[in-house]
Amino acid sequence: MLRALARSRRVLFIGGKGGVGKTTVATATALAAAREGRRVLLVSTDPAHNLGHIWGCEIGARTRRLAPNLDGLELDPEQTARAHLDEVGAALRKLMPAHLAGEVDKHMALSRETPGMHEAAMLERIAELVEQGDTDHDLLVFDTAPSGHTARLMALPEMMSAWVEGMLHRQARSRHFGEVLRGLGRDDDVGRQALGASDDAPETPADSRDDRIRSLLNRRRHRFEHLRAVLSDRERTAFVIVLTAERLPVLETIELHAQLRRAGVGVGGLVVNKRSPLDAGAFLAHRSALESEHLATLAQALPGLGMLELPLLAGEPVGRAALEAFSVRLPD
Figure: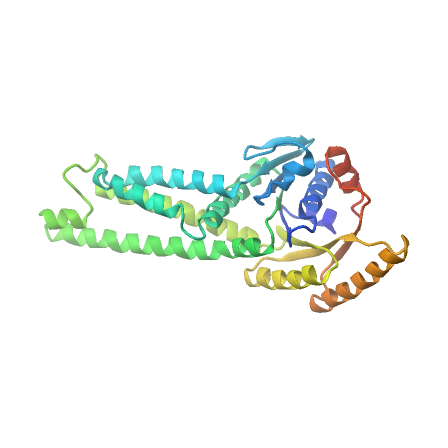
């Protein structure tokens, strides 16, 4: 299932409850695709930085070559939000009249603590990577943060698109109001203030500034609309939920599946990781039987969804050699 999805899709999201092996499964999938000649970018959006831990090296926010045809990247939410706000602040300072620079700085300082800022900044970065991935890589594999964070992230493109649309509508109304004022010949102080002008206004005329603001908003709208279209395109994108065969991960998987469906994201399948063997003593055989009961509940709740079971390993797959060996075990 995983190999088939990696061959047929351009974007894969690997998610699920924390601690179930999402990073290992994402890495194995990326390695298998890279061995088949696809140019793959493996991206971690999890602040725990497990990608670098299992590869035994520092990866960070700059693309690093991990294996032939495979690049890796770790997105840190704090760093991503800081870079995002710095970029937005710089753009606003260029667009706004000089006397409002202090207000822009105050607004950006407050924005750093706004709830949802990290998710919004992360979404913008993911949207950029998806756009770039069309030319730089054949496959993007996202190793995502635990379920709750990821479900909110998948729902954000719709909300952000609506927010930008609202901003464009308000900007258009403001511009129309300015044109009415100019048509009335209002060139006094009140009219100038309504147009956002001042005695020490920058050389950029109000009309030009309005055009640049509209261009910036349109660019963001197109980026979010593109990401939303990619996420909802089941021929291009799939979300794979990783879990262990235990009660809580099974229940969380059912809920995550429902949240993804509401967000319009197609689930390509389930990966049951660390499955206990039947032939390794009475203790593990008992656990395996209990796991089968939980998986029966999952199959009943999500009928028709492909389910891949991966065995419990004696050791942890850490380092390139162990990860390569684990990826080879993925069924075709």
